[in-house]
Image (cartoon, rainbow over all chains, first blue to last red; front, side, top):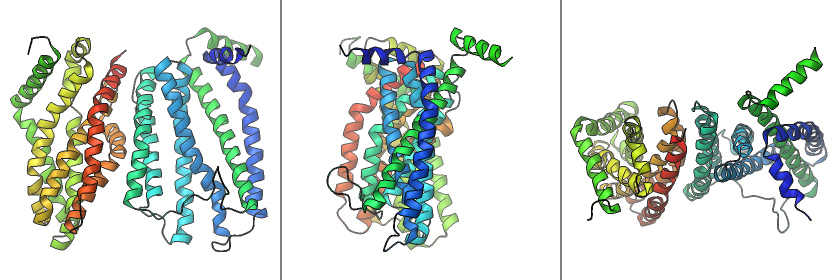
Length: 254
Length: 228
């Protein structure tokens, strides 16, 4: 019988179990993320050939494009966690949704900064009111709104539930914003990497990109788990398992 | 209408909110004065050149109205939450979404309708060409309820929080981007003599969706924010 999967997921909903699981996974995810990021940067900066039109400046895509993917991926992950947290009232899901927001905001910020660094030599301007740039900026504002709403409540749980709801409202609205802004103005190039069908990108440029994507995903996991652990310790500080943990640490430290 | 029926409850709530607003008539004038003053600042900041003003008039009126609506939204549910009537509305046998919808309607009548009435005046001050003014009013009639509905959901979310003013702006303004784009786009198209019906139709579609979904979302958000 394959019912150990739901059973395991069910047990993972308990804070102490998740705390130990996250603690076990985090160093591996972080280490692997650093190794993969190193490999991808080497591949992107030294192995891949220069672009025939953009020269070496295009190499920023090895940071820019994976960050842009992550900014949307994290929003998706956050929306799923928020939905699960609101519907089934699972505490871990709420914490995961709330602790995803700062990581997502950071990736969105990196996307905007690297994009503007690239835009200066290529488009001749740091910023332009282009559709993709504007929707990415709106996404950053939504992330900040979620973080702000979460921290404006006295009660963490209530704040997490309200902010989770905002995440879902944003999830309905972000596509609308994207399409309306697209209709309004567009300059950004279309995407060149496709999941289905051939990509319009050279293989020697593609593999560092995909490696970097894996590295950012693993980094997200590592960063998220570290944040969730800290959040759990803070919000469950009165519970027995946290006291036990601290007593154990003091005992071994002394 | 039989007493206690849903329609009677909605009518009673609407009448109550409008009466309360009418007894504090000064508050109704506040958003209008705010919009007038903000719109007056633009010629001071940008210079009184009529061609420049005519070019930015549509956008300035929309942003001004948006900010005025934002300021008035802050006290949409506050009085009801403070004196406990919100708990009574939640306990009422009628669906909360409908009752909340009535409150949003009352709020729109008292805060946005006066803004729509003065919008042609603002547009005239900013030298918007006369043929574009009816389009501006039409776009506002569709855009302001959309803003009120979207805003009500977010106000409901902040109902239980300590600070809300700036936070509400941070949450609402990014979500309003499509409304501003389509509303100002319609006016810009009318100014250039292009067909302006497409952006108006998009606004109408958005409004139709928001009228159905926003009261439900607002009721759910209130239940989340109020449970302690």
